[in-house]
Amino acid sequence: MPHHLWMQEDHHAFADSVQRFFAEEFQPHRDQWKKDGLVPKEFWKKAGDIGILGATLPEEYGGMGLSRHFDAVSFMEQAKIGDTGWGFSVHNIAAHYITAFGTAQQKERWLPEIASGDKVAAIAMTEPGTGSDLQAVKTSAIKDGNEYLINGSKTFITNGGSADLIVLVAKTDPTSRSKGVSLIMIETEGLEGYSVGRKLDKMGMKRNDTAELSFQDVRVPQTNLIGTDEGQGFYQLMKQLPWERLIIGYQALGAMQCAVETTLEYVKERKAFGQRVMDFQNSRFKLAEAATKIELLAAMLDQCLAELELGTLTAEKAAMAKWWGTQAQCDIIDECLQLHGGYGYMNEYLISELYTDARVQKIYGGTNEIMKELIARSMDKD
Ligand SMILES: Cc1cc2nc3c(=O)[nH]c(=O)nc-3n(C[C@H](O)[C@H](O)[C@H](O)COP(=O)(O)OP(=O)(O)OC[C@H]3O[C@@H](n4cnc5c(N)ncnc54)[C@H](O)[C@@H]3O)c2cc1C
Image 1 (cartoon, rainbow, N blue to C red):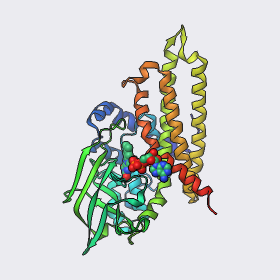
Image 2 (cartoon, rainbow, N blue to C red):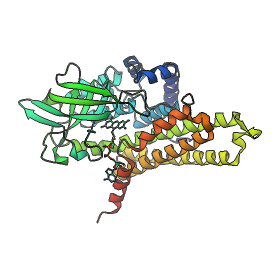
Image 3 (spheres, rainbow, N blue to C red):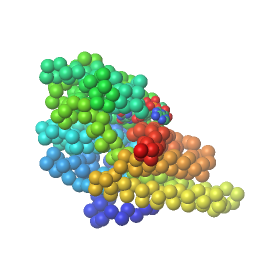
Image 4 (cartoon, rainbow, N blue to C red):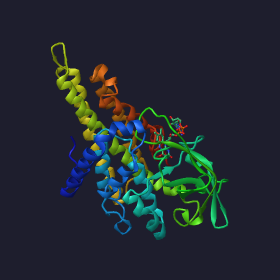
C-alpha cells in the first residue's frame, strides 16, 4: 500500500486515532445506519471531539490549524473502511468556503460549531434543471431591505436532510450568468419557507440523507452573504473546487485499497479447480495492476496536494486527478468484484457496497466529462 512521503510522526499518530475512532464508533453501527439512511448527530459530535472535523480549520475558530494533509488522512481512513456515506467531506468543503471567503464575524459565528460537530453543514449547488452548468442556476436571492428573499429548489444535496448550515449557490442578479452568482449561508433551524423534500433513494451511499431542498420566500439577513460583495460566488466556487476534487481523489484511493484488501482475503481462501483463486494467473495480474494504479494515484494526489498547499495547483491538474482516480476506482472495484464470483454480487460482501458507492464518484464534484473539458480547454488557449 502506498507510502506517502509527507506522512510524518504526527500524521501517523493522527491516522491511528482516526482508525480507532472508526473502529469503535462507526463499525458497530454501520449496518443500522445503512438501514436508517443517515448517521446520527451524536456521531458528528464524537468526530468533532477527536478533532476530525476541525483539523484544518483555524485555531481561533475552534479548529486545530493543521495542513490539509490531515484531512487527506481522514478521508482515506473513512474510505479504507468502505464508507462514503457519512458526509464529512461535504461538511469540510462547506467550512473551507467560510474560512477562505467569510468575514471575521462569519467565521466566528459558524466555524466553531462546524468544528465541534454541533452543526452539520452542506453545500447546495445542483438544481433539478441544472447540474454541470452551474452558471445556469435559477435559485434567486434578491435584496429586500437588509435581507435576501430566496426562492428556488436544490436537489441531490449530501447531508441535505440533517443540515443545520447550508452554503447556498444562488443568483443575486438573475439576469447574469457567472457574475450573478453569490454564496449565501442558510441557517435552517426554524427557518420559515425552507423545507426538506424526500430523502432520495440512491443505489449507493446509503448512510447519507441526500435530499431535495425547497426555498419559498425564505428570508435571511444580508450579513449571510459569504464575503462582502455580491457576484463573487462563481469565483469562490472555482477557487475551492480543486480541493473538493482532491478530496474525491483521496476517497477513491482509500476505496481502492479497501477493495484490494478485502479481495485478497477472499481469493486466498476461496478454492476453484483444486487451487486458491489467488493462484490463477488472471487473479494475480488483476491484483498486480490494481496495486500499480494505487501507487500511481497516490503519487499524483500527493503532488497535487503539495501544489495546493503552495497555492500553485491548477484547476486542470485537479481535474486530471479527479477523473483518472475515480475511473481507476470504478475499474478496480469492478475487477475485484469479479474475483469474488457470485458472492461479490451479494450485499453481505463489502465489495458490493464498494461497487455501488463508487459509481457516483464519476458524477459528483463535476462529472468526469466536465473534468476532461476543463483539461482540454487549458490546452486550447491561444
Ligand atoms: C449521490 C449524489 C450526491 C450529490 N451531492 C451533491 C451536493 O452535496 N451538492 C450539490 O450541489 N450537488 C450534489 N450532487 C449533484 C452532482 O454534483 C450533479 O449530479 C453533477 O454535477 C451532474 O449534474 P447533473 O446531474 O445535472 O447532470 P447534467 O449536467 O444534466 O449532465 C448529464 C450528462 O451530460 C454530460 N454533460 C453535461 N455538460 C457537458 C459538457 N459541457 N460536455 C460534455 N458532457 C456534458 C454530463 O457529463 C453527464 O454525463 C450529488 C449527486 C449525487 C448523485
